[in-house]
Amino acid sequence: EALAFCATDLVRGADEMLAHTAQTLCDPKLYSPEEASETYERCTAATLLALSHSLDQLPDDKAAALLLPSTALTRPSFWKFATHASVLVRAALYTLSRSIALRAPALLDPPAPSAVGAPQPGNSVPDLPEAGPSLMLKAAAAAAAAA
Image (tube, rainbow, N blue to C red; front, side, top):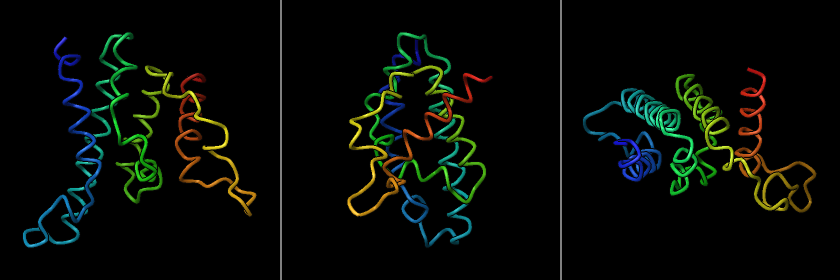
């Protein structure tokens, strides 16, 4: 009950955290670039894992609604975490993708066919930042189904 009550605040806080970069999260006067990068990686991974855990803990009827107000999932920069240098961030994103596939499959409904994964004019290969979310979620759904 408490998690469902605080879901909007949780998602808002996650969106704010995921909008940061290593430079905007830490004060450059207090942190070296390496310390700022490590702090950013830990905070990003913790945020992704918190969203995943929240999805897993909510009842079925409220799990799908948890991420609907999130703006982070719609940003192409969000899905670039799949290729992040830190294995901690990549693993956290894969964990969240798995939770979405299992608990909120409605979010897997593809957008208009021309929007995601469609080849760009003059290019026969889909634009990866646009295709990334659907491809990653489909892979997570397949992995969850196989488990």
